[in-house]
Length: 319
Length: 146
Image 1 (cartoon, each protein chain N blue to C red):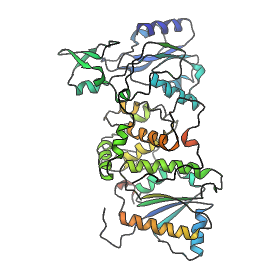
Image 2: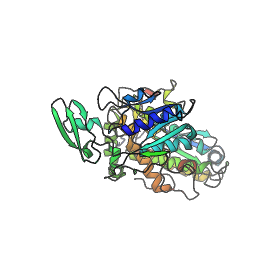
Image 3: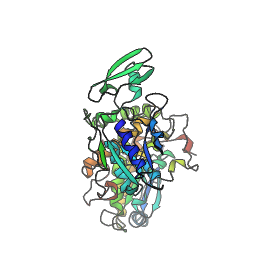
């Protein structure tokens, strides 16, 4: 972390970048938040640790409109989103100086609670250790690093940065599960079970729009779900179709552009596994139209803006 | 959901492209080929004009089945529109299936302007299928229904 701050300071001082986009200390150790730093003094609050799950690429859309370059720290998975936004001409690559940071999997504070570790005051981040030391009000506790990791880190796409100007820090491979196993499990259910599963998950939705706001692909200037003319634009206190509609349309709008960064599931205050929607589309696209990973190749044609004359007919493989 | 009431009539929304399927429906009419009056046709410029939202909104507002008709692949008036529609609908239908919506409430059929018979047969079989499925409960939203 000191190496990152040091490098950021020297780039600021040399005038090569006008500001730094990174993560800032929060009130609690797990409350890390994205922030812009304009001076070397402000960088004292800079932090990079296991709780820095936030994907900073989306902030580059705004930063691309500002004077001067922005130094941005990107984890391997964030670089896919950055590339995808470059492809969509939302980010100006020339306005960004990218330092690719190493990643050994990011943590989810809620998972510590699930492990019965409460009132966390601090957490150690040993670089090569498999255990996470957590300081709590009741003394020090240990937890296997893997048990506190975000879901997306278990199905990591790889620790190689897709785009960068320089790299700092080592990564550790965290992939230990099949990315589509959860989707396949749901696909194997009966329609009644599927419906009950999604009804149970989605009825928790409070329509806070956090998933939309954090999603790098969901960066339209005008959003259909902000329309007041839409008679189901607000959460109703019924078991209506509304929240399913919201999530289907949101997933559809990012289909073929979603890099599966997992931010939607990370920020959901209700703990809804929203990645299941995006991953279903990715699985279908891979099966029907050939393997495609958004954010890898800037020049590749997106699956929903291209076609083949012998594509599958709708409804094939159903029921 | 089994329906005991034999008089129940489903509401079917059919999105038909201006160039092939709508003309196909016209031909079915002028050829005196019968198809159920439960089918409400909405004319669209091309099958690819149909946004997935249109289909979900139709269900939300009380449709029991939605069918999309367009030119045969390769025959699109705009050359390639229906190829894009095909990919979109494939993904949307797969997603609806994933959410546990009964199979058979959605369909895509390619009907040319010369296929009045096919139009009438398609609508008859689709209405029959939806009739056996009963009213759409899982996709409706009370606030949107009149």
